[in-house]
Length: 356
Image 1: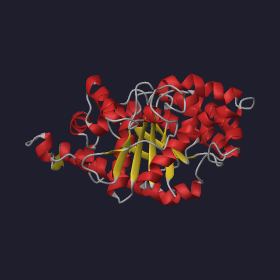
Image 2 (image 1 turned 180 degrees about the vertical axis):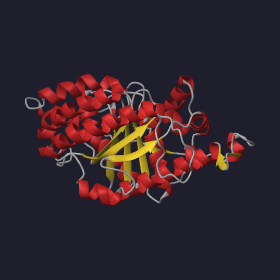
Image 3 (image 1 turned 90 degrees about the vertical axis):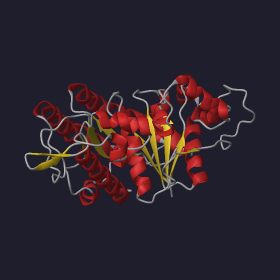
Image 4 (image 1 turned 135 degrees about the vertical axis):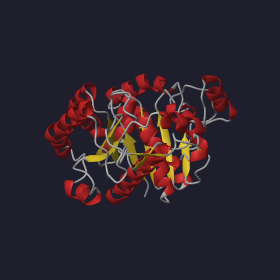
């Protein structure tokens, strides 16, 4: 049975899209059929996966065929387009070049236009049962797309907002991952999520009992910490050590996760059992899935090539000292960073497979 994983944090700039793309690609490389869903109106995942770098090209993609993006597939249900029919099964996912096991349900800049109707449906569906279809539409579309391609795993790249649409997407998932960055604003976001998730659980419980959404709440698999710098280049280290300024906030975030977020999620049955996590993740403490350092120009090269950092090779990055050279008896350069990132995503992907 397909497992749906939501990648969510209400704070922006925490590498949700990057982690969705690179984790999904790694899971596909490990032999799983993976569907990526771009549910962020910014459409960064769509651009990254398909090599689309501007709006003209993006809208050309929309016009190339109908119902190949999340908005067009759902628009008939919301009565917001002239696309014939109202069956969300009539859509196409897009094959991601260079990875046969990976497909994309593309995003659309107009997706946010559904939010007012979704919010109304959540508050009014008791009196107007017909509105329940809107609550379950996202879940029906995503799981239908997964079934059509034979996907083992779906990863949803969500927008950084506490919207009605996000609530439906999130509560329709089986699991979720919280990407973070070690700073004060992410600390605030984790504190806020400790209140948001229980509210979402309570609000959507009615729809879980009537079949619009899965009966069980999504369970947190863990947290990813990204966008920090390290002060060591020891390629034999399992996880790189953060520079002091980042480490302080990383520790604070880990502490509030364990002290506040984990107990709240446990009460709502929204977190993987600690014993299961510890068995799968033998390289870090609960509930830390991965630390992923800032890889500087490699991210730009990844975006240019529409492939993950860990698959960049020397001829694509540039030969010479920037790729690899010896420094104080150690090999350093982009090659070593690529190898480190590959190890981190491999460990994380294998751990996730073990937990789900």
